[in-house]
Image (tube, rainbow, N blue to C red):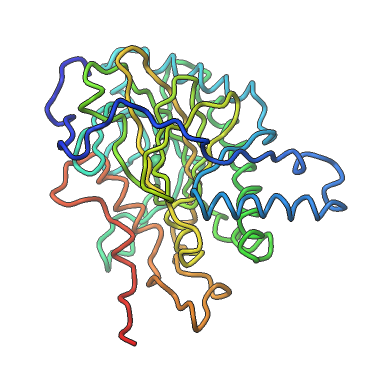
Length: 356
Ligand SMILES: O=C(O)CCC(=O)C(=O)O
Ligand SMILES: [Fe+2]
């Protein structure tokens, strides 16, 4: 990624401002009650936690969690393996390149909204294989298996990633329970959508960049799945669009915390009570950065639509049902191909306002 390709250059109106807005930041939520033994006899603290989650989801769409129960050694083991993997030559990394037929793997040429991202990634599915639709064409009901391409080096990467994904899955289910409670639903209301889930871990490397005023690590986007749980190193660069005023807010790294955001799927399930919020990543002319988002996604055959408990006469369903797997099969390849149109957006499924 040495020479500067014009595909990286953002349109003038989207270019990063190098002056960073430091604000009070996204909410910090302490999950320690989940790890205490007296959990069942302590419903009031869970209720308090659910309220904090509700406020965070409503006001920001993003929050950080501490005392989350994920062992630090597991996170560090995967982070080290990721650094070793990306330190190899491009030729070596391209041996595990992902493609349209089997998207799990390495990419060094990715686009968000048609501008190239200053990053390289390794995508690894949690379920190996993961079943998804063979194509996004309506009428094609065929399925295919996505199989991980484990790199030979470093040899510990596979075990590190599998162990880490197990921990992430547990944390994701805890968060899902809290989100369900926060919406006034039973704790396990959403868990049935994840039996054969299509979640994946993405290892990301943002190399240092000579043109941080013209390019992004990832330009502004929303995450399509249910929840994203992100581990970032201490360099920083993630920015979240503050709902209150549309200002881009820098998320200062909190050691060992995870950053959580709700994706489009939860926006639809909640019938817009919670919104999937735009975010982006700035790059840095001096420092490279590593991050590891875990995307918690439903089963391919889940039809995503507003939950019936959250629909009322005053608040009718705002979306038509759509099939998660088809959207996933559409989204994945479009991330690495230059398309004439933006990625599929949730607006496609938004119901038109009925004339009153
Ligand atoms: O690396 C980060 O901080 C954010 C990554 C991200 O937003 C994504 O991969 O969707
Ligand atoms: Fe994202």
